Image (cartoon, rainbow, N blue to C red; front, side, top):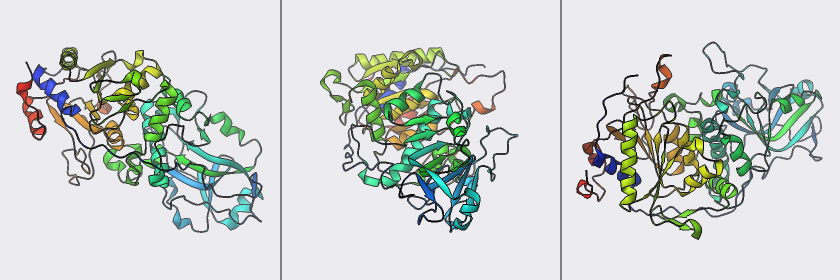
Amino acid sequence: MIPLRRTRNFPALVALILLFGGLYYVCDSGQEIRGSLKLWNDKLPSVSSSRSRVNFSTSTSIETTIPGGDLVYGFGLLDRLYLRKGTFYIVTSTPSAFPSREHIIARPLDRQANNDLSPTDKELQIIDPEEATKILGEQALVIEGSTLIAYDTEQFMSHFYHWWGEIIFGAWRVYSSLTGPSLLARDTAPSFASRVLIPHVFGREWQDKPGLNAGLMRATFPSTSIENADQWDDLDVLDKTFVFERAMIVCRVAAHTHELSKSWYKMISSTMVLNVPDTFWEPIRRTTIQNTIGHLPELDNRGVIISPPMVVSEMPFVTYIDRQGTGRRLIDADHQALLKVLKELEWSGICQVYVAQMEKMSLAQQIEIMARSTILIGVHGNGLTHQLFMPRSPRSTVVEIFAPKSYVHDYAILARNLGHKHYGVWNDTLQTFPDGEWYKTTGDNKDKRLSGCEVKHTSLRKDERWDDIPFFVSPMAIWRDVLALPITFATFKG
């Protein structure tokens, strides 16, 4: 690949970082949510007086219901979901209350051009209560508590972003819409699903190579069991029907049937229509940090760490994720120029800077650096998923560097859900959007609430690589975006 022409302008880079960090801008902080944390297992439906089985002929409550009233595409939360010989059953006398099954589940195959992923009777059936005994037998064995069923292959699952930034993030957003303002950002580990069931993945295939998926699951949900295809197959041995007290079927293909996915192209698009507290993710973030590093840094409105005493700081913390050892990277000279400007900011007493090579850091080190960070900078890639553990503040910012003419919403959606300002950077252009507006392609999409998506790296030839990304933002582009901020270029030296 021939690198695009590179332009050096250190003052522009300095102003860029100041802009992104909002280091001279102070606004009121949000209020912490207070109340009691309702758990996934709270107020579960009673499926049997003995709680070990449900008898279809004598039980008064056998029908499947949707907590909250509306099923979220691809994140279907259901009470009394039945399972027999690998097939799910919704038992209901009002099938119109449920969306078509393509919005709930799909065939468990990799997403490839030749695979028909349309769900069949093998995956899910909706039956009338009068048919239950004939199809399911006289009784069902109860699987107590709540179960998260990740109904996909390992194709996308074994990736930090797809597991934590989509499956867990989306599931927690759905849960948070049920608990409402009573969700508390507390220090103890919140209850999640009693178990995570991965029926089409064997062994450790769901885990990412660096070990973030599994390690963080154990830190955040230490009591949640993770069961794979082996345990799923065990349910066939008895040739019996099982009933999940509460289960969420998470299915990537079903999630992408939502209208918003046509604009954002993201699995969690369907969950964006839900009303959740602004700090809905805080129970997860705080618990993960406390259980991983043993303490929780608290930041003030300036992005400065004020407690605990052992980690207090005098300046905001800026973390730059160095991807120069990977295929997707900056032109080296631009990388070096960015490092120089960041260091100049640190020497000037404006911020503290940490250059992170995540692949060389332990899990605890990665979480600790993010727990202290106010600004995160990096080329589009997996490392930006770490913003999940960056504290929300009036200055928290994610700067995502894209290849020119390329844009994907992965980390913009996360940032805006987490309360971080997001900036997209293309060579000499930067862009951010106010609430309610998103990036749009140059096509006919005129609805500012929706967005477009341009993905360069999905159409590369086999001999091409998505690397050597130029990084330069012109002073005029910055100036247009910072007119309201009390900074001037005269502040900086070239």
